[in-house]
Amino acid sequence: MYLVKSPRLLKKLYPELIWDVKPGKPCIYLTFDDGPIPIVTPFVLNILKQYYAKATFFCIGDNVNKHPDIFEQVKNAGHAIGNHTYNHLKGWDTADDIYLQNTIKADKLLHTNLFRPPYGRIARSQIKLLKSVKPGIKIIMWDVLSGDFDVKLSPGKCLQNVLKHTKSGSIVVFHDSLKAYERLEYVLPRAMEVWSKEGYEFCSLTP
Image (cartoon, rainbow, N blue to C red):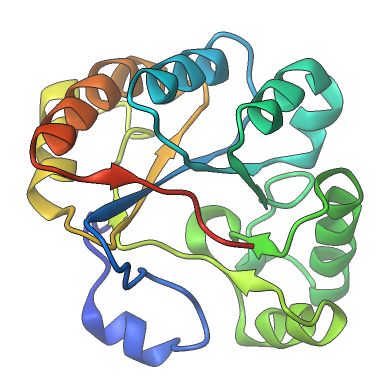
């Protein structure tokens, strides 16, 4: 079970986390979790290029190790990089010291102040620990969760979800993963076409 739109109450309970952005212009913040992955990440990069879009890629350290050439493509295209831990750890099920070590291990490859907890699951103690060890870290959540990872969700419904809930300043989550590819391949170009016609720009998050 997941919510497409992050509720206001959750944002109020965790004000130290970043849920959306207040831009000075009509802008949508596209983010992609779990890459870099062959086929999928290059597909995303190609679509973004067509719309002169910048996005933020929250990378898994182990995938960067496996696919350094694709990671370089992401960086060379001018997109922002975020940390998504080295092994995609779920904070609620992981001891604080192990979570910290895994995040630091990834950061040795990623070198970024942007961090997104896998599954959006992070304990308050882990938030405090990350902020104490790395001052200036920005823990990024989201305003809209596309649901592209949900194999039971039709591509059409996934598209409907993001178009219905996204507005200027929304941080939208997609996944450049094999599991999400069927929905991502359908949704991303169609959503970006609609948003572009509505006058939105596509911006990366600021580290």
